[in-house]
Image (cartoon, rainbow over all chains, first blue to last red; front, side, top):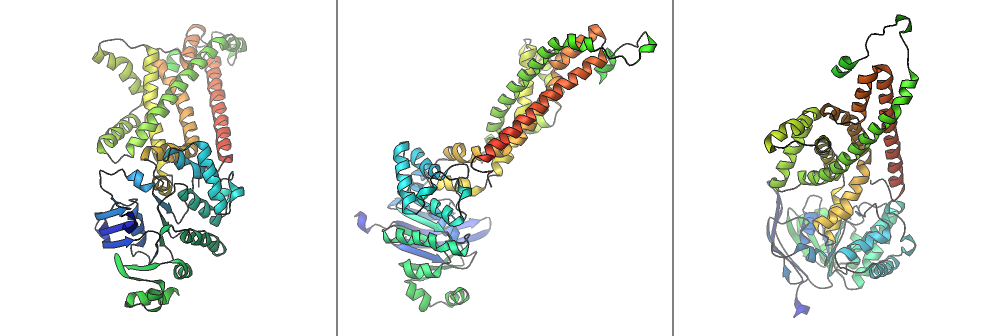
Amino acid sequence: MAENRHMIELRDLHKSFGSNEILKGVNLDVNRSEVVVIIGPSGSGKSTLLRCVNYLEVPTSGTVTIDGETITPQVNINTIRAEVGMVFQHFNLFPHMTVLRNITLAQERVRRKSKEEAEETARQLLKQVGLSEKADAYPDQLSGGQQQRVAIARALAMKPKIMLFDEPTSALDPEMVNEVLDVMRELAESGMTMLCVTHEMGFARQVADRVLFVDGGGILEQGTPDEVFNHAKEQRTKEFLSKIL
Amino acid sequence: MALNKRRGRRPPENNNNKMSFDISLVLSSLPLLGMGALVTIEITAVAVSMGVMIGLFVGIAELSRYGWLRVPAKVYVDFIRGTPLLVQIFIIYFALPVVIGARIDPFVAAVTACSINSGAYVAEIFRSGIQSIDRGQSEAGRSLGMTWSQTMVNIVIPQAFRRIIPQLGNEFIAMLKDSSLVSVIGFEELTRKGQLIIASTYGSLEIWTTVAIIYLIMTLSISRFVAYLEKKFNGKGKKVQ
């Protein structure tokens, strides 16, 4: 049954850049509606892990399965990517397009929606992220926090099954972090399957169903936020947490 | 230039009148020179338009991960940029007919040589323009499920294009000036028209000065137009990070 199927399954995932092995055999299952937060020191491979899920990085070996469909060279990667939204550290909005166009473009090109339909969806999502009045603005007229909320709306417009967040608040001024986290929190409550790389431990504690500590190219420890933050078993996890908490 | 000397004004017979500048010669030559200028604009416009099309494809090919696209593109660009346009014109007008066994019309030869030449320079402009767009832009497009070509057409190329407007303008100006080289195959653009008028009037001073001013008016107009385009595009949206 579809109900029992994992949304994301990673099996023995390896990724090397030249002779530098970043991921050393990662296995991970993420359930439907589960919110998984990935923490770990920089260079530990957590962003690479996230980027392998939608094949922005092609794994050196191992498999990625999204909602039952394993990615192989025969599978059209674009149809899978359309089901997996991604939010980037630096927003990556399209600067030559209005906010509205940023959100409608892929709906029209990938989902083959009509302009009217795409705009309706876009306006609805802008309302959801609290930016209704910014539809006709260009990205450079928005603050960082607003841009990131638009980026989330852009990803949601594809009606994805999974959302990936790659340090979504790291490039933001401190006072803008919460407006983005609030949107993510609502999304989690709505039942979205989420995989987030973040340094926001407050968010992880509050929202995550599971926290993964990644170091040295693998998942070193995982558990509920309480287990990882308060009762870490691994020395490296404790050291990392003592530095950031 | 050698041509200048050969066709230069003969020594004035009247020595009292060393520095005469015959303004009426200028005025009477203007219609012919104007026609030549139109031909210069025509050949430049065609060459740069073709060059932009060739350059877009070659520039993208240069960035391809497929060697069978990348290598020929690189060879083409290197060959064209590494040899003089004058020699390229000779190859197309004089050498190619030997191979294909048919004479080539001067206009076709001129336009072909200039287009192929321009294409190589524009290819480099596009290549660097595309490379200057942050990788996050194409990643964002691909992460939404858009194909490589959808991402290029909708996201990368429009941004690259805005960024390279000044360089394309320079290429247009350079081509306009270099198109004077096709005068050597007898193609009657502005420079050739000037030579022909001098051949019958000996008015080197008047005609070459006028020809230079006409080129200057054309190049200045282009740079003004490019500046306007730049402003127009950068006002809307943004000047791409």
